[in-house]
Length: 414
Image 1 (cartoon, helix red, strand yellow):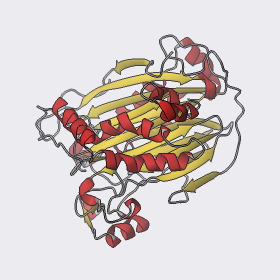
Image 2: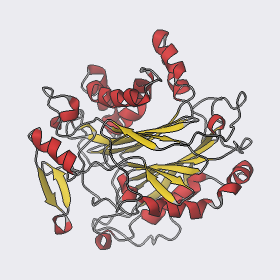
Image 3: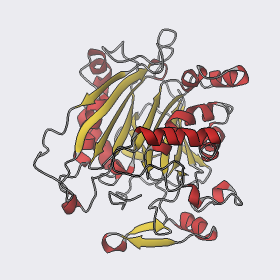
Image 4: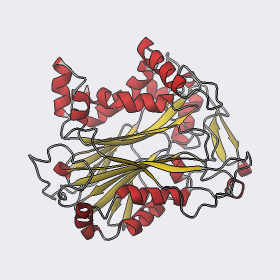
């Protein structure tokens, strides 16, 4: 069994989409979805991923679903880094990276963030995750990083866009959740989002969207010499220096002054961190890019998925039989968010869409046909007993509301 094993496939296009519908450029959306499903017996988890290019000319998102962070990076580690990686063997890592200006930085983070986290002590996960985000900006400027960006750019030549070979004018948001048997630790920079469903009664947002209009974000931007302009319908979309509609990201190096600490940059890669103790009431975790959250609220996504997934008490048996696949529910969510007319929706529902779903199954199901088992399947079984407790935050603490309105971001913007 290895981390790379999972059920991988291409989901069908939206059944109810009219093939005769086109955008103002004469394009139809790409509705095929790349899907993966797997499980982690140690924590009683079943995980799924689905992504869709949608109306965009190319796909700029990336994602992570690692049943064991330690196992995922161990093959490339040696010496002290090998020992450090082993500390992370009982941590699963899930994430979404939403690229802008190109897919290169998002893919770069998909490749390098796990190892950067695992180089730090497991005993301080918030510090490890924060330092890894900042390390990405450093690596993007090093010779090896520049070579990788060039290689990634050349892979997609011919899509009509002039490729970028540096991380100036290009970056990505990043939301990651590290899952252990006891807690969820979420790091977020940008406007992707992580949401926890607890019996559907309370929607717990594990991250906040970093928008330039937030008082704390605006203060940092202006103190660093930046400014905010508003555009879009009714002038409701705030943009950093009239450009970016988000205020934190990895990459976008033109906004990062090396004379300032990273957390003071106009656009900073420093993530906010939340820590939540797992409880028996936890149903599932969803991480998604703003292409989803532009259309549905956090509670709306929870309600939609609960309906598609059915009663939680049936998940184990239906996963075991193969009747239930989380990627099917995610595919329907993405179809639900897809605009059928970009003019009518003012661009909403036209972005790339990526979502990761983690089901908290009280008792790990037996091997699902065609779905990979996670690490420790033969050595451990999930007890289903988790430690309850409140949510805590660090590196920019904030109070999370029960739900939030859709982000005011139009498709086609950075």
